[in-house]
Image (cartoon, rainbow, N blue to C red):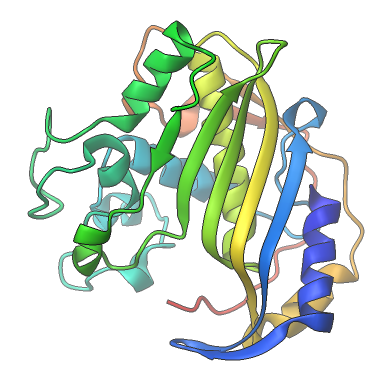
Length: 275
C-alpha cells in the first residue's frame, strides 16, 4: 500500500485541482482507492517515521467511546488538541461516541453513557461470530443530527467488514475527506489495526484492506514535505502481534496489548496540522 500511497501523493501534486477551502489552499482529487493484503505485512508507512504509540492510543480512545481529549493529552498524545475546546478538551460526539453509543443524546465528555444508544462495535463482533455472511457489518460515524456538537465532522465515516471464503476478516473503509500527508497515513494504520483487533477477537486472521477516499487533498504548506518524502526509498513492511485474551472485551485494549515488530523507517517529516 505504501507504493500506492506515494503514487497518490505524486498524482495530487502533479494533476490535483487547486481549491480554496475553509482552512487553506489545497490540491485535490476526488474518488481514489488504496488496497493491500494484510497477510503481506502491516501498512505502517516507512518513508517517514510514524507516531505508532499515538495511533494505538487514539484507537483505544475510540473503542472506549471516549470524547475527552484530556485522556490523550495525559498520555502525551496531542493530535486532537487543535480540534477540541481549549478550555475543557471536549471533542463532542465524535468517533468513539458514535461507535459505541450511536443515537444517544450527548451532553459532555464526562457523562456516563453506559447502555445508551447502539453499540455498533459489539454488534459487528456478534455478527462476525454468528452470521459471517451478513452484509450489515457496518460501523458508521456519520450522524448529521449531532454534527453541530462535534469539534469536527468525521473524516473516516464508514467501515464495512467482510468474512472471506478462507475465513479471514477484510475491511473497506470509506473516508469523505483526507489530509493525504498528515492524516491519511494515520487512518491507514488505524484501520488496519482495528481490522486486526476484530479478527483476533473473533478467532480469525486479517484479510484485505480497502481505503476509499472522496476528497483527497494536499495543503500547499505540505507540498515541500511531500516532495521530500517522495524522494525517499521505502523499507520492508513491519508486522504486529496482538497479545491480549480474546475473552476480554475490546474496551480494555491499550498500548501494551499490541507489539510492533521489525519496523524500520526514514526520519520523521514535520508539517503544520490544519485544524
